[in-house]
Length: 607
Image (tube, rainbow, N blue to C red; front, side):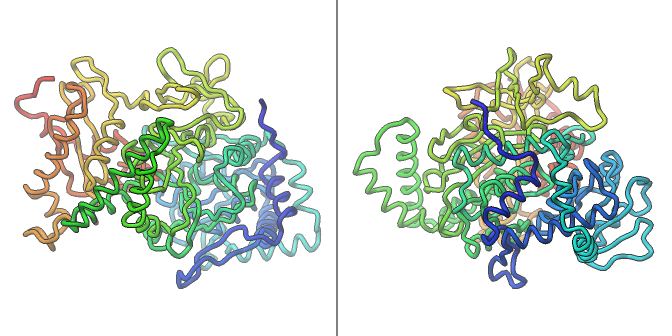
């Protein structure tokens, strides 16, 4: 059955939300002292977004004209995005960690007319660049530079200009919004580029409105929830959550400071939070290592509670009743152990959502055992991020859930997942040949992911392009092995399996700085630097022990024969992970070529 989407565009959806609940809380930003959220109503958000839209219209932004945002996740990002679209423009997203060369490339390739920059440092990334279509730079923070080659103004000044324009022409925004249809360009999101240069993905208003309605239909978002939104709004995952919040009227606290996330959860007390697996891995690592480091009775009680929780989850996943005796045990486990973890996440979590990369089933089971179920989902930038998700009342651990809305899915003969529907992109910007290659003859988008459908639930096997073929002809799924290792070794930050055209598999590992310092406490390594700890024989022995546990679960040709602990974590700046925390294998293998070569030097182990 076709999903009923009662909106022509995101601005249409936004203005209808404002009209329906003008005085309800819409978005919040952190108080200056981090004492809690500072809320704006839908009417207040509308007032500012319309002023920004009118200001942009005055700068010459017209229908489908790209306007770039280069900033961290914050309320100003949301306001600028709404303002761009209410003016009829299309938001071009640029990650705040993007290097100047790539930022210039994205702004030039998109043809952006205006750039919203977080501060002068971000604006400086385009200094001296040849950007003939760029007419203005708008700063969220800091003073405008009157000597800049591209004229600058502050966000406040843009809003003041827009307010004056609206006083002269009160119906300006309504007229502009009326001219925007579902097939008009809403966003240009540049793929984070695990390989090669990023491509601009053209996503339309109709697809984003579909996303907002579809999230509500599966019970993922409710108007009585409180969302903590920290995800990069430059990423499609963040954008689709904004659309869901507008459709539902979901109060959303917006704060992209990842380093403050855990501390502020207990202040904000959300009922809903979405994130990449790395966030949940860090929470898992902290819980497990804290219990192990405590030792004695505390460690035993923790292990018992987890065992009880997993037994309960196992029965629920199998569709079997939970016996009364086990329910009583679980109540004790929750009081003694899990309630503390729940409190650390604010104490009110209804649902957690994981996306952007694979989540280890072991970690998903741990959270379900702690009564903090994670609804894993699946989607791509090219398909507006939200395509499959586990409904909160129908969790199937190890899968990414059921298709949302009326999305069509087909599994190709080689196992590739093919998708068709309203959230699928119009194409790659200025790349007609690559656009044609991305679709089948009958219009299905080629995801590049391998998977299977099981009673309507999608299980992802691996990325088609990431499959490793050893010199012995065996195919290895590296992300599956990496996820298993992260769940096995609670001190892991990142793991990268190597094996393409090699005759055995090896692995590069980085360790979590906080977790490994806790591991070193009370030993001769206490107080040493991160590099000293991870290069020690003791750390190598510890990791080797966990690798042995991993290998016991793998096929012989998948086993890891050698492992190297890297002296630092992988970074976005060094081209090793994307801003959405996916591994850039080509960058890792290039930057650590010497370490990889050493693992394959000399006598090679036989598969």
